[in-house]
Image 1: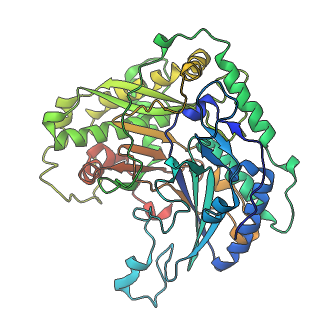
Image 2 (image 1 turned 90 degrees about the vertical axis):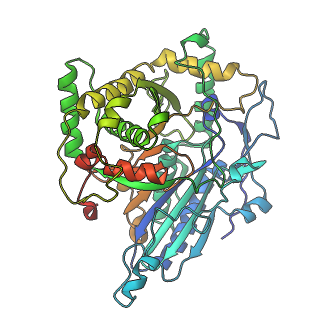
Image 3 (image 1 turned 30 degrees about the vertical axis):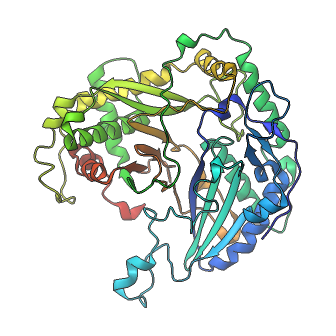
Length: 487
């Protein structure tokens, strides 16, 4: 279905929108349905209501049509009918004899895997609404969807331009879409929508205004950005992506052990512990594979939402970017890593069903990394957030993002409420949300919690041999959630 190209006032993205690189991020929302084809009309009506209330979602990110702006910055402009026809707001694609779950008995057992969708390999243009490299085009859509109709449900793939929206912004947009799908025959009134083009514009001005109120002190920024190339094109064959599932109760046990060991007032969160586990296991795997190139210092890059840190606060309903990138450095215990899991490289397929005891020597290393993460995040206060915005504002050209890379890059969607959203009688609630994007090596997405106390699901991107060793690591095997079929 081709929607009309709505009009809206062009605008310049905020300083924080210029933090991420130009790339489309993706999310796969899965709905298990008895009659998947019925979802098409509901989604078409829902998307129509969505863009009538938030017309800027049809727009294009562009760097070639400057508005009245003292700086060289990225803007958002209305799309054209031709571009909207080329990249419609909602594409519908049917995948005959493809199943979300195992297909019925009439499918030969030898073909079950062939007919069942695997998220680990589905990141391809058959399922995506936009080509891989579209984000670097002269005009690149902010937001597009593709409804993939399978035999037993719908996988709705969402692509959004990261320079116009962050993960919390995506949650806000999908929440509005769910409201619009609940009763597709009824218009959703503007007063029912938590944000609007006007509110978004006021928030962008508020973010820009925080820069003028501080004395810029570049030396106080935690470190100079490391400008490295981010592989965002077709170079996705060098690494793989897998979902790792960790037990919540064991994460809590490790949290308590680390806090007790440190005997300090610094409170470590479970998110800190998860990040530290990934950091330790990945660096240990890489050291085991290549001892001669093991790093003495290691960097973890994460993000912190400054919505509630800045004053005045940024509304939780804001769609644009409000994340500040934080680079955290810690010594890596190379010698200890090489002594860990003796014989691991010579044992290519250990029995994953066996219970693995916790290696007590891991606790000090885990505590060291978790404390480094917590202390790095604590440093991001209002003053630091304002200085970060000021540094961007002072650049003559905002369009060159300061890309900060690390050995591990982590972002958390754990607290986001995707699984609570109701899309109405036809679609119901999301049964699975995933981000099987293999483009950036070392990236870990902590996925939303399905319920309170749910296992921690992490979508991780690594080289195949590193992924294999991480999953064999004694610490990972101890904390791994074994009853994966229950989630």
